Image (cartoon, rainbow, N blue to C red; front, side, top):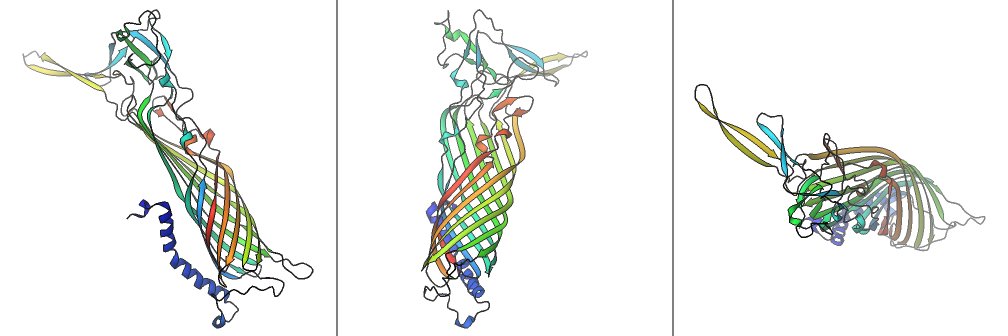
Amino acid sequence: MDYHSLPEVFRMYHTLRTLKTLLVIALVIASAGTGFGQNLETMQPFDMVVPTTYGGGTRPNEGFYFDIDFMAAWMSRPGVTTIGSDVGRGMVYYVDRPITYEQQEKGTTDTYLMIPTVTVNPNNSYEVIRDADVSSYNTGMLTSGWVCGRRYDVGYMWGHHGVGVSIYDINPYTQTFTMENAKVAFDVADKPGTDHSWLHGITTVNGTENVVFPGNENNVDSLYVYGELGVKFSSLEITNKTETNGVELNYTYRFMPRDCFGRRYGIWEMDFGIRYFQFREEFNVSGTGGCLSDSWWNTVSQNNLIGPQIAARYFRTFGRWTFDFQGKFMAGINNQSIRQDGVLGSNLSTRYETEQTEVENEGGEVTYQNTYYEYIGMQGYPGYINSTSFTFNHHGTDTLFSPVVEARFNAKLQITQLVNLRMGYTLMYVGNVARSSEMVNYSIGGMTRAMGINMDKNDGNSIVHGFTIGLEVNR
């Protein structure tokens, strides 16, 4: 069975099994580390625990250490935003039949564009804003959710000093939703050189909701609707994927204060180091059916944070139990990269007609000449868009200050001389991160412009928190 097809809990178990070897190696390294300056032959890393208060309390361990935590992490959802433009144009005109076509040269010999021409008579035409020009959905269906993750710590302590590396990795959190008859409004500009927008087209009155035609109530089939076509997809699928990971390198200074009687009431540690943190999100949308069938747009935001970090940790031992609290702050520089690609109306087709005429030259020889007519603006579809009109690829970058604040709490039970079982809770906040679903610009306009990235909305936030369980070796 494929690893990724396993349920989350079994994938976590599978990962635990694969880490057994690493744990054994870590035990060996830790044992060797604690042996520096000691008699290796008499060392008993798995001996029974004998709590002692000799010398003013339990001394913290020194030498190599290794920790592993398994996390049940809760990831916050992005902000709620409309799937579509809030300023969509919705004016349409109802005009009498028939619709005639204007012939224009396409620039190729014997090829002509056939463009629909409409004369709007104010006396028998009516302007209506239709429901189809208002978006049906927003991203409120995206929820926060639970995923599994891992955290590894490895380092070395000697006296008051130490160095350590921490690796943090959370499984991707993916959500997929499908909506039927989804209306998506676009901010549509006029096609350059015309008085019509890119979504102007012809359709029939039938099926238009809440439309009243004064003076022509009993003969609506004699009318055409011409104007801004409302975009309604028969099916709209949305997928949102969030993932995060990071690594940090720290120098540790350990304080071991005593009271006036020489007793210890806990140990303080200060960390100074550098941290890298990555937050990545994908927002993918695909629509089928309707006047822009088929369309899709994918927006991917990459947040790469790096910066100095300061942390404080306090822990105290009571017999075989140790409780520790840790707080971290990173002043991150966030190098953002946002990419978007897609296409609108990839299935739109154009009707072609060919007219063949006889041509007789001076010698009486007869040849045949073809004239090609390309009709755009067929009934129910935009007049100026075909399958290749709006294929797009956008890229935006920015650099922001992004703070990272993290708090941890752990309760640890000493199992053997070197091994602890620990359980805890972690909370992390990341500010000023780009979240893809909040940054989509739903627009059509210009010669090649479609969709886009709204870089003014690249300052979202993310919260990750959850429960941990793991093992410590010589920590």
